[in-house]
Length: 515
Image (cartoon, rainbow, N blue to C red; front, side):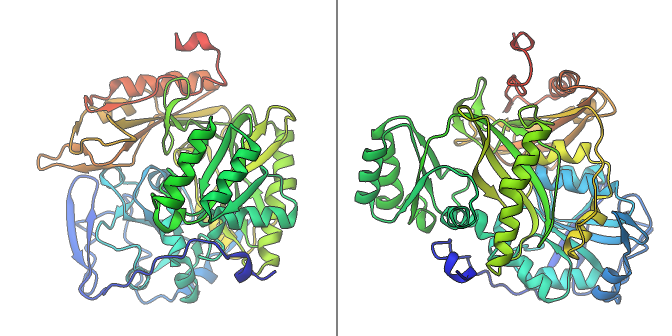
């Protein structure tokens, strides 16, 4: 089966066309805002600092091949430094910028579009006006500023083909092609790959006809899971506890067109009982190396109640994923996926984020879904624990040289508590003011507040601009200490317009800690 035939049913990537002439980008320093025009800008080292370092490395005449080939990587140890562009503007991208800032091989960091917290922290220079869905504009920017590595955070630019276009221009890009991104962009694609290469997953059927889907649901019974085939902003998975709920989910997707083309095909899947966990691996097309484990909290309310969200908190490592289970995941899920994608002509380069269910009745992992980017908020706890040179490792992945690369992690645990706007994941008010973020980070040296949806108001205050707004992250000798520090930091923040779960980590910690 060819990659093209296997991709049948994948969501068609949107085509984004715009003019990059006279495209201007907004740069934020740690304490002030400055502007320059991409077509005629000159860099002023005396007025602007990147990562609080000099501007060396911004050679706009240096070719990508020179930058890329001159960076020698020996088991993740760099001999030269490169300029990195991170695509995205959420908490995940803030965490990536923070880790890259600690990378010896990283000379300077841009983040597009970034956010107010990323810029004010000095973790990166934010390019607020760079259209990351316009490949030509991104390429022009990379050429202008000598970018030697692009790291793509969110899925939309990947599905739209940004990595394809950058790689064609010789720009090292950590992120899969649009064809390989179908692992996330189409659940039918992922399930078909699992079928062909023997990857353990839930039993399923795919449907475009609502009557056929409902007949299958009636045959299988409830509880059962109904999923939109394509990307649906995290809202396309319905865990139906009754037949009526399942029928309603099918009708909303196939009849009422609730998710547009993303829901024109549905996956009806067996309900798996067990404990969810997140597993991440870096992939270079042929080889894969595991990251540490993490566990997310998807439901909005304490005790895992209420609707699903993008994630209300996470911790790492996840005790449910023992070293033995991690080996099982690599051997039975990750390696077959990497091999299968290569054999289908869709070599995968990037991070594979496997959503797993550790099945209660067997104790073994099954694949629920793949994402083709770092999880958010799992990325936050992984990046504060990572001690290896992230830029060098990601470049090794781009070069197909992950074999033999190992990663170093801090001992102990990390936890992130997400603070969200009241009303999330439903409608919420924007523009509410947030105070005392500096006090939060003074709770302990290991505390870091990652910004997801923030901006500055006219008075220079941080304001909330999104649903999930802050990721208050802390490390500790163990999970209990990490939790205590994270919640102490949360309590320092003054934000009447926000809320947070008070039981992050409850599965791994005794209930008495939440009384």
